[in-house]
Image 1 (cartoon, rainbow, N blue to C red):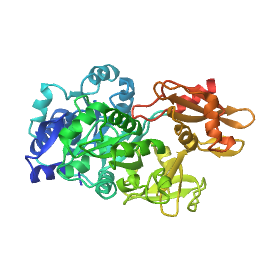
Image 2: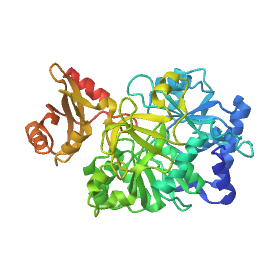
Image 3: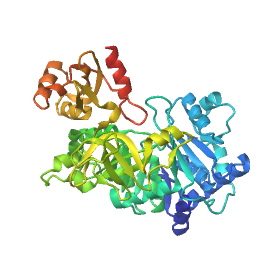
Image 4: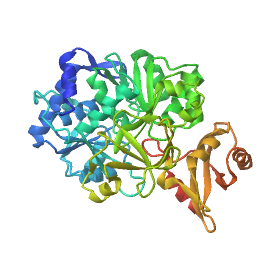
Length: 506
């Protein structure tokens, strides 16, 4: 089934219900939302000869037109290729070329750059009067029929090494992911409001589907991005706000809330994921804003849907093992089966550390036109995530690191996250990232990059004493590099590759 039918259903059930909001201003009810999506589909079919299965890019910053474009592409039976607006036009052009896209929907400053980088590709502007005329066209009365196995969302991985790979996500994958949300993350009602501050081209945009099916509102901040004060001011006006946020965004919102004496009024749920949320940070978040937080663990290859740590578990302080649970990424979501395996594929017992495997209806069928990478990643029905972790006897999954980030020094494995957690316990440390660099005798040695809290100083000798008092001597950093900030990609993930290069260069 075409997942765009969920929009059609909500428009029939509650045509006058508010659907799209720019800030707190309603720009479309559900009838208008569905009508515009249909109009976009009709234009793509009539103007470009788009056929079911074709790919269409979306290269724009967050705006309500993003959702009109997304559902219009799906309504036509095509597949969306979401591209983060912060990418360089040349990077976007490579993605669109690899996807063999038929067209790209653009807005703002993405249009001119893409025209220069890929002049032959048809571009459709979503930020002028022409878009309103386009979306007002007559289109198919119902979404084009598709099978669950048909491509719906072609997502390109962030590509920290080499070219990104196109992750093929089907309509059935999106439905499995979406239906897990109200069971494992948070129930959704028509009175709720999905707030898109994080890039809609990534995880935040995926949660549109379940909110559309529930007839909930979709709001984009006027800034189109992450402004902690704007989020805190807008949430009480909207009420029932749910949003996805990387840990860096959560930290920013919590810090501003504390500085202003706020507790997050109007925010129902902040779903955090995409990178590690350190124990000290989530403890501070719950103390400042209460039980509003849910953790998820997923990948582009199993979008948003491997494990979850519920609101009650995040906020619980009564269980004897609450700290261990809070340091985990929760338990398997309803459609996911998780295993831990060694390099031979042998499944390991609870407590043993190995690579995290997952299978279920949310897992991608493979990479776009990349059989070799697909064969490496999908084996015997399991997705090999590349992440290292362990399951306990209760089913809680704890991440230790990406397999490529594990430091091997003197034959011993050192998990950077364990060292980072310790560093973040120091009151003067705002951020920390740990990498390995080559060592002629030990193979690798531990290097820590640390960012001080505003107005604080960091003394490497003091940090060394701090670590020695909490972890084994062989795990402690051999070098501490104080930095003003850590390099991050467009989704807020720390670029460990860049840090390893900096550490190796001294």
